[in-house]
Amino acid sequence: MGLDMYLYKKNEMGTGSPTEVAYWRKANQIHQWFVKECQDGVDECQETEVSAEKIKVLYDLCRQALVDRNPGLLPPTQGFFFGGTEVDEWYWHNVLDTCIYLAPHVWEASKGGGSRFTYQSSW
Image (tube, rainbow, N blue to C red; front, side, top):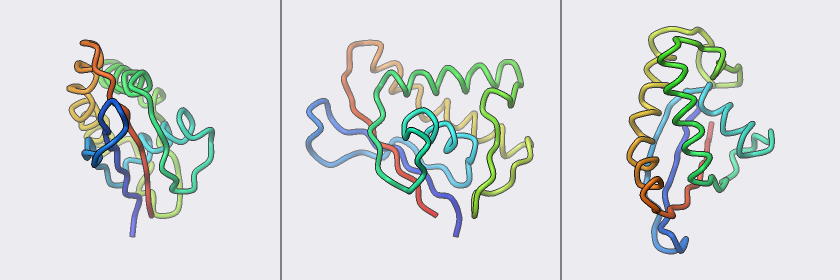
């Protein structure tokens, strides 16, 4: 058991099968960002729509945290099966992975793409 997190992309119309954009395991700092910024603080493993604008905000925040080496921008959070809260190599690895996962979608959105995203976690 553990915190599993998924970000899916739907086409502009919101129809068709969603495509997995990102998968994280126990990246509690990223999960906490989604809970606060997209789920109004409610953490019940619900599927939540995430705008392309929010995806860009998260991408920019991860980039800034990496450049500044500032874990205060995405603080770790405790939770049952959420993994460790140390700011260690795994913490930074998850932040870097998030940048890598989101970069093509931020670029697509900057070119006028209207993709819709959903986030869901489970534990």
